Length: 219
Length: 219
Image (cartoon, rainbow over the protein chains, first blue to last red):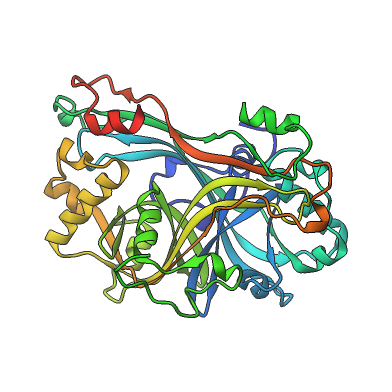
């Protein structure tokens, strides 16, 4: 699918089920990541799993998540040894309704990334990551803001996960009933679903017109 | 907010950040869960976190996830001792753009549930859970399908997580800039986002009109 090498295919990045829906292609994985507003960050705390939604961004093969320096994942990764994480991004694209209850499904695109998250300490990388986090939500947004000052930077922690053990899984198909069920008098098919933007609501302090990047997204 | 008792408030269900955005109210938590198509299921495999998206449903204080009997989480929970999990559901409701990069945020509703998942073995509970999983995607859907037969039931594993250590976190607010930034000539405000249904696409085998429950959702 692409000239760039694919991500690592190993036991951890190979689904046990529906293997034919998996891909390790870099470009496809990047596209799924970039289209999501939040990821789900998994880590282990006191031996138990914790999954928290959080804003993220991708720069090349680096995935950044950010949070307060006092938050649990940031403290977990601040010891210098990094923290084992699993970062998962999911889009639901359609509800797949079949004549049998058993064959119901959803159309989706998901990415699961395993690895060790490390805290970003280099000021130049931190600046790149913070811009990317803002631009991830609205492309070009960071140029239309006051950038973080030193006091704010000191309050922000950013974790880096280098993308390597990563796979995507997708389904984009119709209803798939067993042959024997096709004649049953039930409705089968796909109900597409997708996120939609509403009309932007300016804050009362806003004195400028809606910027072009926001107009492009929401009109 | 309600006459029903709230869920357990302890160290694990109390966010370290923005505690004022947290709630343990049962009805609010149920509403957030019921509005989501998928959850993110976290568990620990070989000491490392794994987060997988999966279909789920809620029946009272029981949350059910299902999968193939051969899938990793199902095998992990099948030993009789259960499996520590974290189940997280997130809705993104708006992009919150501020004049400072630092104060950018998202409006969201999320639920994080901790506990031990156990495999459902009672046939009556399994039948209830399977109907709930189909009805969770489209209310009333299970009545318009062929229910699972014994062969299909044997291939399906369902995990039960009793909701107890559960909290929700929400933000539903405007842009919140620092006083000193309010005069800056940037656009600040909220861009609402919400999932939207597309036009249902019937499978070629479908001979009946679109059922009322699907018409209600998608028109």
